[in-house]
Length: 439
Image (cartoon, rainbow, N blue to C red; front, side, top):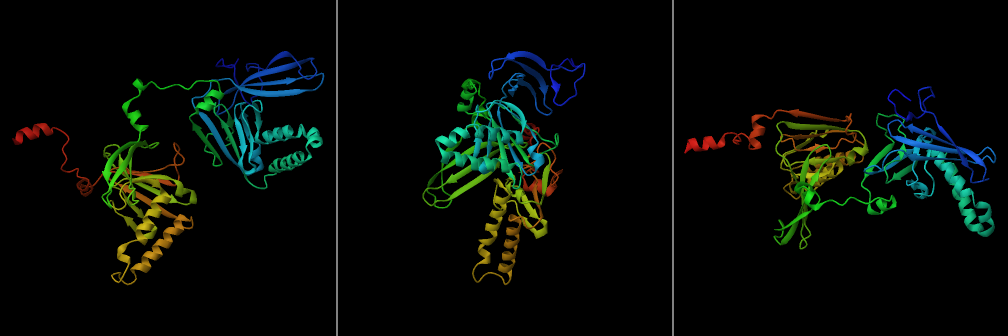
């Protein structure tokens, strides 16, 4: 046994006197009905968890088999791994695929359904080889009974084999509702740019497939705040454009690694007006916040952001500044906010008609084209959000790790900023004593 007394030895570790060794059991071979040997090993996969690896070998007929099972409990959530396979090295990544996991290659519309293969500790190339072997198994009989289907399967097998050359990148998706499958990150514990890991709540069908019952929440034990997060509130109001009766929807949303916000949306069925507004769900922060993002890649356009009604937006390279009141509060993406700014510029009423100053329309047209270049990923700029109330947010796609292109600074508000927020005349301590002394 190891020093810690654990029965699990690290995957790939050298066998030593103190390390657990595979247990060997004499078993019946299902191919020739003679005796073979089953070997079982409890092993620990780095940056994952413990698994049970089993293999069988028959010395009489040569038949061999292997499978893997999780040595732990079902996880609280399912897991989905999405890997962009770009090089042959990616084919060598180790994969733990449980029998309830589904593997897909979207480019070929190919899927290995759950429970169609036993669990395996293999590689991505190994999964492709197992799929090819499974398709080739019944081909001789199929060619005699249904030649057309056999021909199509042969063509598909060639496509699967061609994937191993990695002439073109393809996507490998491993979806396991039990949460016990795994795709290796060779750079662990650092982030893998080509691998996306998503955890999700199991559906009722997935829970039934795993043979478990979903835990029904006790209505009496649900906190009011939790109940509010799961409910969309609706109240009657009037349309700000045509004053017709309309309805406003309100939802409390928790932004990861930030705070709660309230999103309100109004839709008028008479004039078709649609508005949305975001309000901070918390108090004004003790310090102001200045967020600076160096936009270097088109993928930055997909970052979520929360612009509160007290936030100013700057793009120094374009000498552009958007004041606090403009556009109001918004919960959108960087692309969405830049498009709103572009629309605001292009539909500015002071750039239309005879009242437009000479050259102003041309300047705004040039500015709009520069904004479009940013949206198309052709121009690198710094995007700055300065919120004295500290209630704005820009997504860190590397969270909880540090984002090299994102910088957040906290600063003490000036007197003018406190005055604009109405804080200088606000008294929150001993106000009852002061009120009684004035009387």
